[in-house]
Image: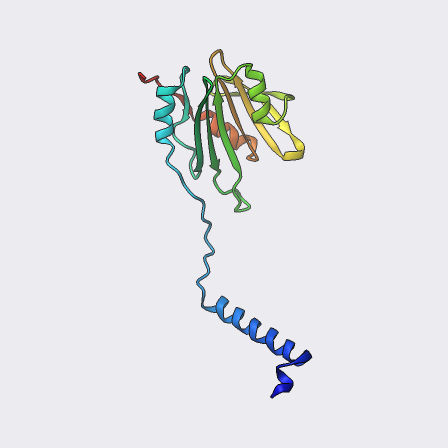
Length: 182
């Protein structure tokens, strides 16, 4: 018996016992094949922004079909009010989702905020969405597309790894929210 508990044979037996244990664990543990993407409710941030922002806030209404809101962050830092809202897009033909986000701020200079959110300052063209002209930007090394709109009181950036049509859908869903009294 000592022969199987020491030396090379002991090592082989120990490894086999561990592999059998792992195999049994994998067989009896339930396996989920469905995706789990945490969904958030960003309505409280919209309400807070409507109170806090010195500009009229833009919010998606409705959220594009099949999209899942995954993150929302509203900040007021040194008088600069910023809101960032992230999404997992609807599944594409390859059954994969992409990322898209909406960022808006009254940060000055506006171009610096837009450049930081888009990760580039190079415009590649313009696109009309619901009669509004958006500047297109593309950063190839990050596969990041961005739509930028510089308004007098707020800068809006729709960006992510999503395709142009998906970003256009998000930009097209944006509705101006009325300001609420502080």
